[in-house]
Image 1 (cartoon, one colour):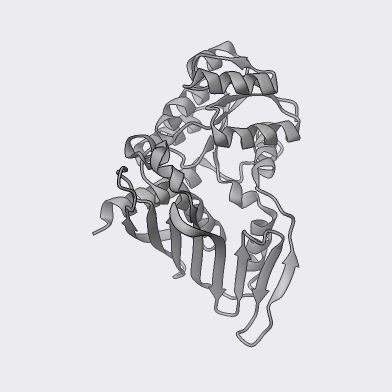
Image 2 (spheres, rainbow, N blue to C red; image 1 turned 60 degrees about the horizontal axis):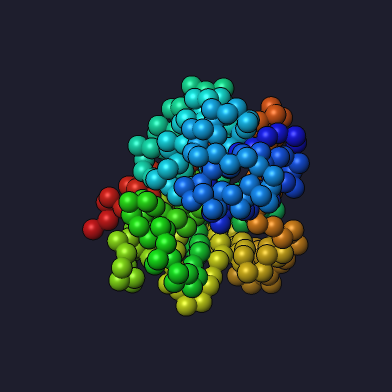
Length: 317
């Protein structure tokens, strides 16, 4: 779709957004970053104009939509300003720095003609869409157990903003398990209870770098969501066991979805297209902006992920 897009924040995740917009036929026309060198490099690559900050970018009227790719502490301010200016927003996860910021963003979206979409890209993966179809078909019965691991050797995080509470709002749970919470709600059901155990291995940080978030759904299903920056070996999978069977997706084998109907049944496989989900996410966002369909991921989804994680942080022993 032909639309002019601005990038607020030009760090690592912004590259994935920019390439997705390019593939979808949108134009990156404006960029801004707290680091001028990063903004200039992006501008040169995509033929965009550089602005001093998001206020200047929005006041220019250059962009009809923006992707917010800043650290979480800056999400709410930038999103609210964009929505008040009538500019559509795709905001990276976690939706905000804290619950209050998420509420403010949702409030602004409700009073704007522009759309606000939290960037839960996993929902748009072909494998996750196929996974959900298996769940909703009833073939594996009612969900009983949800096990999800997103961890890896990310020791460099110790020296980044990802492990600074004043910027990120939390550690591995806030960063990684925000996707996990959304996947649980998308595949299993609404969360009604949550608990957290976590630990800090890094010596120079003030947030967790490993944690397990356990949740319970309104339908009785129980989930465990593992996250870690300090795992010596990476792992990324979703494993759901139901009353009639089991479904497993290993992100390290991205083209295969596995499922079985009983403990005596051999594993069956379903081929799925390999994808990071960014292009599908951006195409959906642009389609919603064009009025072709409603948002599949709403501000409420972003708020719920924040509520679950922040409540677990607060209520842990």
